[in-house]
Length: 196
Image 1 (tube, rainbow, N blue to C red):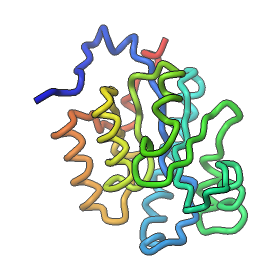
Image 2: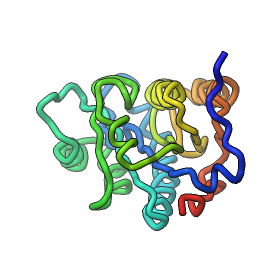
Image 3: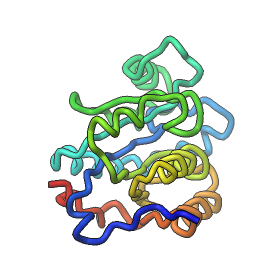
Image 4: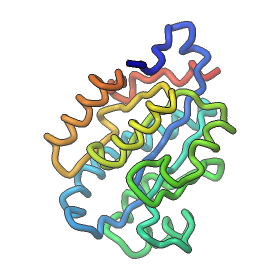
């Protein structure tokens, strides 16, 4: 059975990170949305702090977001709608993208399925992905699985990932650790200076 690459300390110093913010620009107008929103709010500040650190270290920040079935939409229109008309407005304000950030709209759970994410990551020469967002037991997990099969090194800071059910979130993080050897240590432990 093939395993994902384990980077040594020397290899990791040259690893090019990308930070993925998954589905946090969200109206929470779906079944269980009101149950998920408090958990998402609790993680939003930590994700925003990590994104600020990433930008300062010139690590690409990529919003990987659901298109909510709006096939004619784009990320900026999704952001505008969420900010103006939904229960997720405060989270969207806190996580407002910077001008140099990237955006990928996805039609399904995985950020890779039917999107340009893999091509974008190749363009950015990113080999180490930091996964954050919602939901840990669905979209974050499925994106991690697809990234793992593509040979990416993964980090998934547990304090930057939320699910509707906390027990399910814990199980998803355990699966990431045990099956894919993903480091789920808190965001503050990630040394983004290794990018340079």
